[in-house]
Length: 381
Image (tube, rainbow, N blue to C red):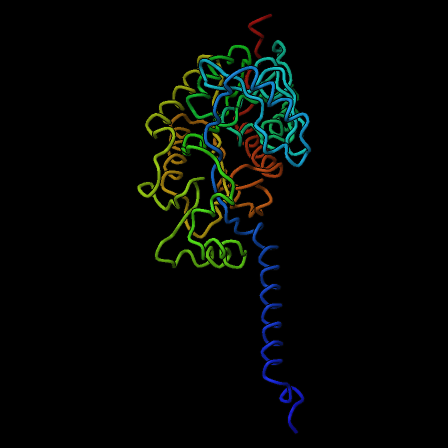
């Protein structure tokens, strides 16, 4: 007996088959959109290029007014208050408060994130962190930044007051961090200086643009395909076998797969190493020890290894830490071993609060292995 389906007109068969195919594709796309953030974030770029220093006090006041009046959903797209600085180019605007992504930020009179720095108490231990926005804690609450996590653990273990002081500024490279230490080191009086400079040294860009702008420079067909999570996941999974392995790690119009294929780094490797060594020397002059933090990124979970430039700068930091016999937290290895989901990152590079927690706990273990520093007294007492 012939099936009822065979009695359907050809047009209806085609219609039903098309609808079934479309529903199947929509289902696959929906599943891929759910899976993608946890496994393969496709828009993998490093931090924004160096922000331009504000041109005048009037401009800074106008930006502050706009920020204060903007709705919460726009806060992340309005520049944070920055001030011109003769030695560093720019710094956080002193004595300001602002909000980003629903999180309140405070900046003290020294232009550092956090509260005022009082005279050093007897027995107090201070951790001074240097780096860019990943160390500063973009979109992470102050008490959840990794240095605060480390300080809380050490305080309990050593039964002494341990404080994390954030010396990092969004966009700062290793040279600017060195100047920060020279400028504020005697005021902070750290027992430990934690060096986390990486992305703003590696990355060089002429400006930032949104993902939509990025897609605009692709061929029309590729523009459409990259809008689908199914395509992006398949591309990531198959990338080791593709003839051209594109690794989008710079916010530019180029796909960079090797050091030769893309633009040069912002700070040359030789200068980067010299800056890190100068930070070590400056820290020792302050009576402080150094520790290093190799920053992780979602690219570390890709099928394709990180670009050669990233590998080179990380290797240089690890080598210097070994030479100085200094504690080091290897973020990429740490995150891989913990098998963290992509939710430990806010975006293509910045650790989220859970990522900061993991880094802070690892740094605490390294410093606990060294032991507490001897008590110090304030230079100002």
